[in-house]
Length: 148
Image (cartoon, rainbow, N blue to C red; front, side, top):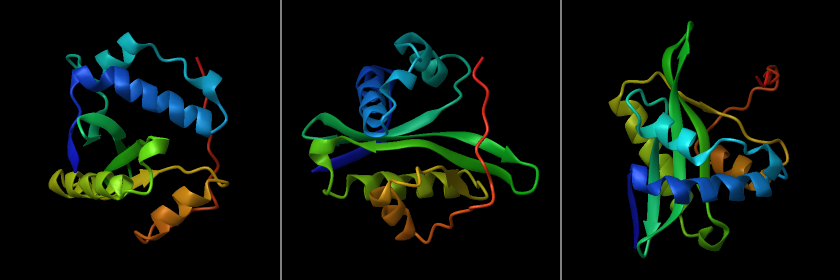
């Protein structure tokens, strides 16, 4: 049985393991530079900037979905899905769908105007998953960032 629940501070170590597993899958493990302490503080400190749900299977966290609030001057508050991860050994059991469905419930309850995320262009399993929800993909925008 799979249980979806809000993440708690005690889940952060396992969540970071999932983040590192995702980074390895995305061929960029060296890019995970956030410390465990910073991760926890940003989710459960006095001014949280992210929220998450975890999926438990037999008492073990098998997946997670982490989001934050993004503000669009055109659309208002939107959910930004930073990561949705299901550990390799638990894929194919519907955990990703349960997590994504919970995100949609959360977004509607908080009256967000929508949800956004990124997906690597080579990640066909993820792209096909999102297409099942009727997601649209925008080829016009380029990602930009600066590391400080």
